[in-house]
Image 1 (cartoon, rainbow, N blue to C red):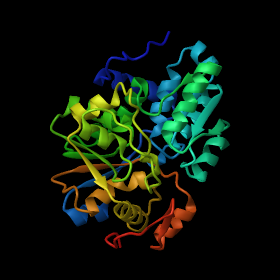
Image 2 (image 1 turned 90 degrees about the vertical axis):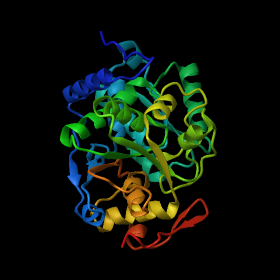
Image 3 (image 1 turned 135 degrees about the vertical axis):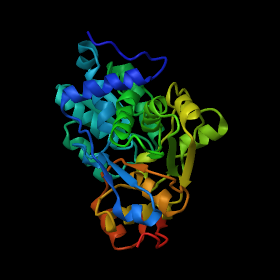
Image 4 (image 1 turned 180 degrees about the vertical axis):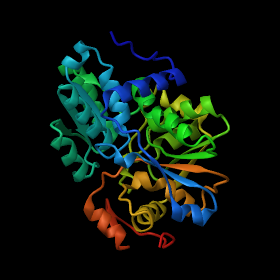
Length: 345
């Protein structure tokens, strides 16, 4: 019988157990950490890229979703699973559910780009578009739990999901025990919280820094307010970082508040620069959320003082947007035009 992680906390022991479970499944990659030669030269320190873009469905979300779904009882799995998502979690849930042979429903708002919607549907999930924000999509997922009896796999605020994402922290320190800082994309906080739990338990001196966009960053606003708050969700290059953290947040808010050293916000132009740098200098296709590490360095908002890891979190981005960024052309988002500053050339 599978025993769920104690829902009162997420611990190093829980994350270590998650790493063993994921290794036994064989579907989640122990992603490599590659030295960025261009960034390392530019900043005079080892800048290391944790390549979660190489996961089978192109993003780190597969870790948490796979771990949570593997830990469901047969009764829970038999009811089918449901989640809300800004795209990548939905794709991960669909992938993990298909691997276990159970039905999946994914609720997505109108802000989720069509490329991500199509990718979820291609994995056999039932896709429901609902509302104009992830909070709206969450309400639909909650309704389906109540009316259809589905089992919910939350995108971040769940101990099994957090523990799955936290396995990245174990790998980071196993590969580079000398790390001084880790730059982590921040949305609902599952990735940041999981990494922080693992890293602070093993090496408290490592600075764990969350990075988000400066428009609609719900966790950043909540940390500033000292409690979970609602923030309007708007179009952004870093669409995977959109959405609220839930006013009834039970885990990620407290973990981020207690363990994270800093949260830094980036403009759309700075995120554009990060995407363009990753394309032109690193030759890696990334979505906006995965470019925030490079963006923060290029913008001078983080100054590395020793080996620094950036989490290259996902690559599920429309090719139309990739091509525009590669050419240095403006990108239109919800009526707003975004261009870079030129520092990524």
